[in-house]
Length: 214
Image (cartoon, rainbow, N blue to C red):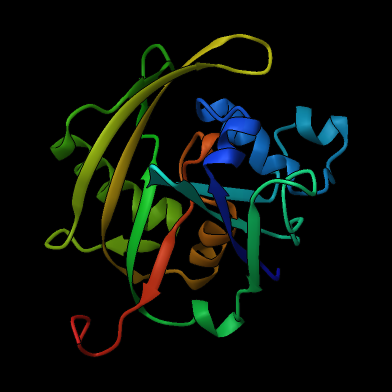
């Protein structure tokens, strides 16, 4: 599957005009850049959208959002707002053995008795959860000596149906070693963990060579 990596740049005027105030409004803007290729049945069956994104934040002047999808986005929002820069991801990019990474994840566990999803709380617990999940679920090993949970945010917003959503977003970074190439490729293309619809799960990776700090 060929993937397209993009960056959406929004200035202050764009952010105000598009009414970006919370994770749902940003989700709405990002998804508007792509053709909707899923049927109602596929959406109901939890068929992935093929779209991942990560909000890089910004400053007084604007905001930057990383995008990854299985199709090309529009060059702007509604032909008027923001600017999108895109390029294809080369197959060779995913053939390295070791990468530096950053990712925003929604850390949750399913209770064995109740089967309810509960949040993983605390940076140390989140780091352990990430290292445990990575080999079997995502195809890589996160190197514990480099792993860092730099930030944990809890955001609340209303979704399209006006239901209140509470979402934990943990910012994790470090180094990884690929264990299962096919699963790693799938994790890169589809994202990892939950809440990918709202900006979690995009693996931001850079290949590491013999000296990762060179």
